[in-house]
Image (tube, rainbow, N blue to C red):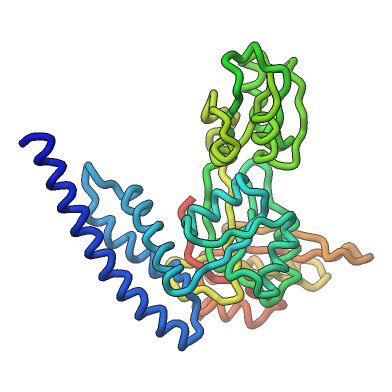
Length: 352
């Protein structure tokens, strides 16, 4: 078979794909009308995961699960925006890892609203300026994001709708041809500190470190200044149009950040759920142990527990707890109903 014959086959297959996609979007439009009448959320992570898992059973050497997921995430994005255009707020600026996480969830067709602080991201959702918000909640090397926890405690009408773990890879970008030409390095301090082994091994200790508010700002500054480089994300380097010299330079190649999608709707039920709660225990010896024993006795796996100050003059604390299970499960209800506990959200559990 000649190259021309193969290309004709590909053209025919592409035509068939477009025809089938049109049929799919016609069905999506009908679903959208039903959801609008019911005033139900457009985004349904559980349904999307079910589709990807079902189609992944057909994977082969040419089309792996990761590729199927990537293709369908964009199809889902087009479908959601066909049902109703989506506006998504995220902790900016553009080019940050939160932006990257939001894009991987919602695709290219959404309207993205970059905001200056986590407080602003919550407020935009509370005021119905956006449909969803995306914020970081924890990093496996730097720990939890306290401001996100504080806002979850403050906003009782906002729920955790979904979670996502994103590999955090810092890149080294520069217009210089040689490392010896680099006189200064722009970076957010946290990103810089996560790449100290790379800096030392490439003899860049004497290059001046200039702190920036974000890695995207670092890429922008490096693109405009000679003899400089930036430690930034790939998406930031792309937006700033600055070449990558090294793609992965972080000391810990297992560096991950967990992000949350926030909504004013609760997520639908899933058998593979995680639940987040905030608990205020009584001030008596063993109060926290009593609560934790409730989970132990119910054979519920706790995945995280964090304390945050209530910011009173009595040094009181709340406890943020994540565990496997859904708030509608009977064993969970038996614990929640007996304690001073507020549900922050039950949502499909994401694999780390």
